[in-house]
Length: 165
Image (cartoon, rainbow, N blue to C red; front, side, top):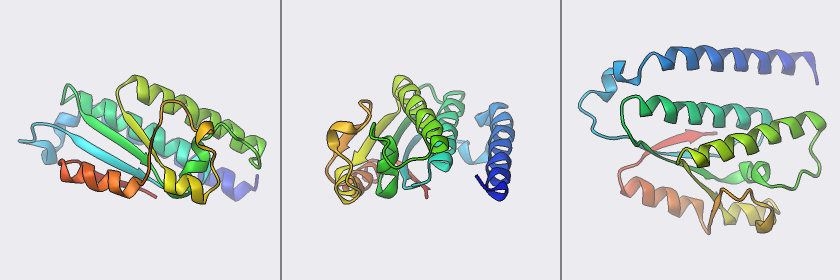
């Protein structure tokens, strides 16, 4: 891996842990949450780069945990669309050894998110476009024919859209 990429990844990881530390103080301190009775969010994940996706999923999971400090049961859904669908498959062909480590992190985070009650979906239109075998998709992830329709439905139910590109 090039030195510049290592520096970017190191900076991103440090930033993630710094932000996570600050978020742990209490989500109740956010003025934006005053008067809000519940939290419902749908994350639109389209990142195709393994290290970045692993980091974003950890941050989404931490956001869910932080919301739990204010709301007993926040409702969070993650919809994988676009190139991100390649990263939630058990098929690891064409990935570097370093990418494989990030794919392990992604699989572990997906498992932990599912256990915590976060719903996970994969867009099968994107899976077809990116040649992802439906049978290879991580078992915690529900297959939906069109991820955009799913996101539209969640928004119609009052979920806030959070893009992760």
